[in-house]
Image 1 (tube, rainbow, N blue to C red):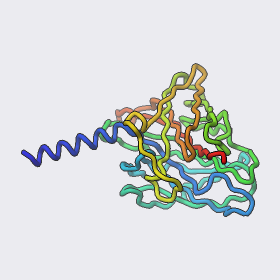
Image 2 (image 1 turned 90 degrees about the vertical axis):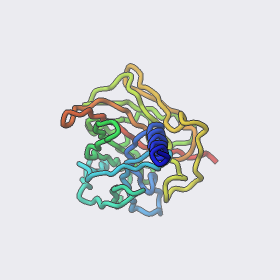
Image 3 (image 1 turned 30 degrees about the vertical axis):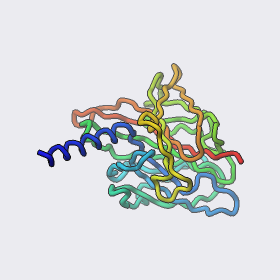
Image 4 (image 1 turned 60 degrees about the vertical axis):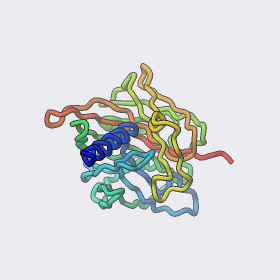
Length: 258
């Protein structure tokens, strides 16, 4: 009886933990602003996780597509992906050699993930922009993903306190009053990141929530330096008769002004 009670308690605590922190598809570059004289090759990790804690990382099947756009020219990187294990779950990584100055818009279409706890599928279409030499070129480009965040404010060169604005689209159309989840990539939970980890005062602080306005636009004032993820949650077409949540995700990084 005691063993059953302990098992139930463990399952209950785990369920609470998973419910307070949101799923986020992560595309994490080793550098998002490349200046003159810096390393021109960057590494990229593709991880499906909970950014604020990373205690629950989901297995990623081979992505449907991973590509980069620079000055309107697309390069498919899907075949360059290599699997690796992160927090016990399959994830993906690659390297990319930047060349000309400008924006490098990386985007991901992952394979649908089956969430057994919800008996539903999740697909999060994800973007991140790496800039080289301060020359803008593609940061506001709409690439036509099923679900997409199109930035209205440049998604790099951000100071802490800057207001990030973007429009949420589904099938090319703006989505009014869509819910957008916001999470901080907690450096204390992710190897390779600089900075101390943070502790939240209550469960409601794990995931921030904003909504788009009638024009599909949302905004968020960034309160801390580091990586921030934005995920607009939308309804997709069913898969094998099961619900399918599609997400439009974008990552940005902010810096403190010294």
